[in-house]
Image (cartoon, rainbow, N blue to C red):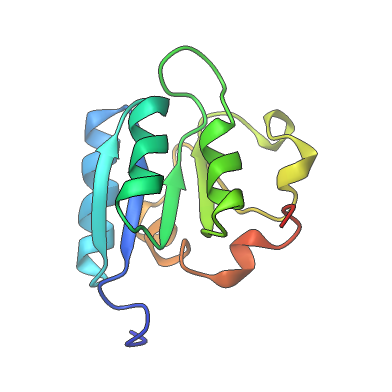
Length: 126
């Protein structure tokens, strides 16, 4: 793994315990540092500002429905991320065109290899 990427802090925004645990294990196996998981928007937004994260895995449906505030905040801070969701691409607003979408069920190992790819922000408003 690239030295620049090794140990990078990756925020996990996921409210399903077992899935969040699988993502954490996959990130750790790659030498990354999992931050979280957090299971609500308020905690995710606070973590983005305070925890010095370098990438994120974001479930758009935490708490009570589809919510893109976390994704908007990540874009605002220029932090690459991927969506990990049970909803299809049609649910994702066009302002996030180019952000990778992993639809549940997905391979957590494949997902873990992706979030630090700088191309994750291609097409997002910056």
